Structure formats: structure tokens, C-alpha cells
Length: 381
Image (cartoon, rainbow, N blue to C red; front, side, top):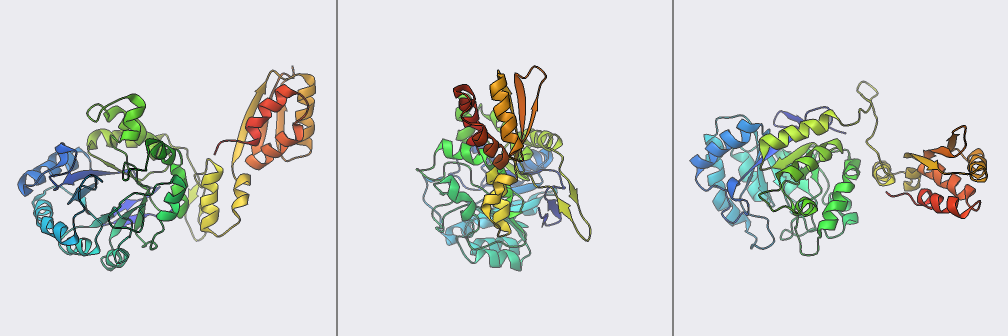
């Protein structure tokens, strides 16, 4: 996993989770507490509510990306840029300033006038965006999107998100964002939940991950909360997202999100990472899908992913015939069986491919064992 330097702020596995606070200078933005059109008021908000509460990055949006509103042109965004520039010039605190846009002209003007970073909500749908970011040596968050400047984040199948992130390539300082939220009519809450379940997969490009999940519908609906009451579910998801590999959390609730992110980081599984002339990193792989993404990156055979992820299954209520069938099956495969002295319980160890092979070999002994083995031969991703 590479570390991205965003104007001196390192972002990656070996560094604390970074908090991206949000300021909008767009009157149509749906979350009122973050919306300002007066630079003085906006700067005070940034100093007190964002940087003062622990934000490492301040992301300033010029328009709402909500699908219900008309998309602003680059010229219309540029007309609002002065307010953003005046704001960051009036801020006394220290932070990395990110401009949220989809247009390379706006990104270039912002970077030329004091911004440090770009948050591209259309994921390089403007093919000139990577050139601009490279010219200014700027970090850029790239949200998964179709190749369409009017449809930010509107990737309508979860299986297509990963490929969408590669649209028009990457810069050396690209951070990937899998695009949570209702960016299109076709995208469902279930899609967002599946994306969150599969968050580790997006580590497959070897680049830091940004998530924007603050008070999102796919979390609120789980607990039956409205936007005002959704902070607890956001914090729970934040901790989980960081444990699953997220490096930046974009939020309106900075202090609380910072604390939740630190908990996620503290209790994430320790993995081997060692630098040097020859470096080594234990990858964060929990499913065959996670493993396939890393195999894809190196151009290998995706089928080997089944040999990369281990599982342990505990069986209980076994009789002697069933124990014998399992023992014989593991004798013919690379899976391992450990059984108790009473021979009613057993543990089956192995990679997904090995345990599936053992399950297939043990089938046919009894209907009860076959029913149990069906979960082993078709494990969830």
C-alpha cells in the first residue's frame, strides 16, 4: 500500500486515519450546518468546527452533487471559486485544503490560488484532470463514476465500481473513493451495503481509500434514523471502515468521527509491514474477492484466490460415521481435521479451496453431514 503525500500530510496504512471536514459554498447543498456563502463566516466555521475539532483536510464544495439539482458548468463553478479562495485565505488554522469539483479548469484555478488537493467527484471523467493534478503535484481523491461529467458516482452495479475507479488511469498521488450514496436513481441502499461489505476489495489498487459515509441513507435505514439522529450509526460505520482499510473519512461531524476512526485504527488486525531494500507487506485479505483484486493487479490467474484465504469450520453433533468421513476426506486433501475425544465435534481448517475439496470428498456419508457441508462448498464471499 503506497503512502500519498498531500501537501505534507502522509496518508496510508502507516499513518493515523485522516479526517476530511466539509464546507459548502453552494446554497443548494442539503446539509445546512456546512453551508456558507460569506467568506468570513465560512472561515470561522472552518477554524472552529472543522480544524478546531480535528480535521486534517478541509474539502470545499462549490455545488451540490445531489442528482435532484442541475449540474453547474465549469464557468459557473469558477464564479463561486472566489468565495472559497477568500475563505481559505481567512482561515488561521492549519489543514490541507481540497477543492471538490469535476472539471480540470476549476481544479487548476483552485490549485493555482492556494488549494492543496482535488476531490474529483466524477473520477477523471474529465480526461485532463490527471494531467492538472500531476502538474501541481497534488493529491487527488478519485470517486468511482461513469465516463460522464453529469453523473458523478452513478455506477449502478457494485461489481463495476472497481473497474470504474481505473477510468483514465491514476496519478502517483491518487486516492480512491468507492462512491457511497444515492448518486443515481438505480443505485439502491443494498448496493451501498454490499459496497461496504466489500470495502477491502478496493485496497486492490494499492492506493489509499477515502470513504464518505456520514449520515448516509444506507446506514440510517438500518437503525430507522433520520439525518438528525444518524450520528451513532455513522460513528459505528466509521470505526468499521477504518478497520477494513479506509484511510480518509469525509464527514460533517469532525470531533466524533475522529474518535471513532481512532478506535477502528487501534483495534484493526496487526499485519506484517517491513520496509528496506526488499520490503514485505501482509495484505488485508478476508475473502476470495479481496485476494482476486491483488492477483489482478499483478496480472496473475484469479483462480488462485481460493488458495489465498483460510477458513475454520466447527462441526458439532457428529456421529462416528460422519467423523470417519471427514477424517478420510482430509487425508486425501490438504485440509486439516481436529476432533475431540468424544468424537462429536471437529474443526476443519484450510484455505477455501482446500475445505471445499474436503467437503466434496466427505459428502454422501449422511444427509445431516451433507446439509452441513453444503455451507462449506459454497462459502460466502
